[in-house]
Amino acid sequence: MTFTALRPILWTENIDETIEFYTRILGFTLMGRNDDWQWASLCKDEVQIMLSQNEYEKKSGIGFTGSFYFNVDNVDELWEDLKTKAKVCYEIETFDWEMREFAIYDNNGYLLQFGQSVDTIGNTE
Image 1 (tube, rainbow, N blue to C red):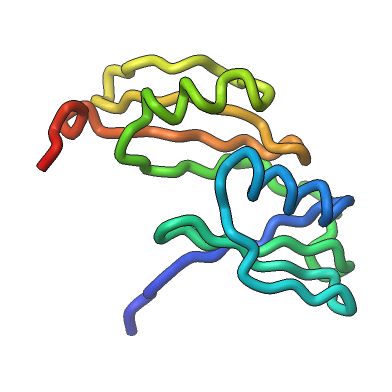
Image 2 (cartoon, helix red, strand yellow; image 1 turned 30 degrees about the horizontal axis):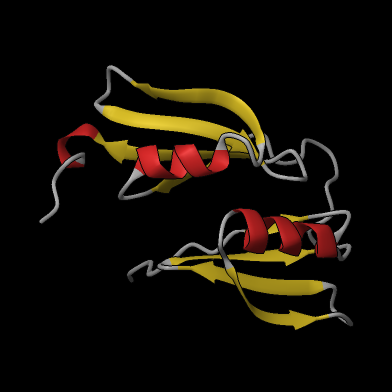
């Protein structure tokens, strides 16, 4: 058996605002939406996420306590674009584990981290 993809479903209190954040701020494309199910699907390049405002994914108990980590191919360019458009968790930095990264919060408070391996920075091949 092979796992082929992970597509998180993010619960939101306002699906319209969340669609707006991911499409306008992060450049995702709305792939599908079903208002009866209170559900939407978005993608950007190879990344797919779903949004839900229904009771199945509603926060209860412990809720989601992690972050979403996006690997990107030009983290400095993305930082320059996002640093004034979203609430920053931590600014861009190169860490000991050979990743250059930063983090922002989406409109729901989910932590979104963006990173690039330092050995790929400046590599145009």
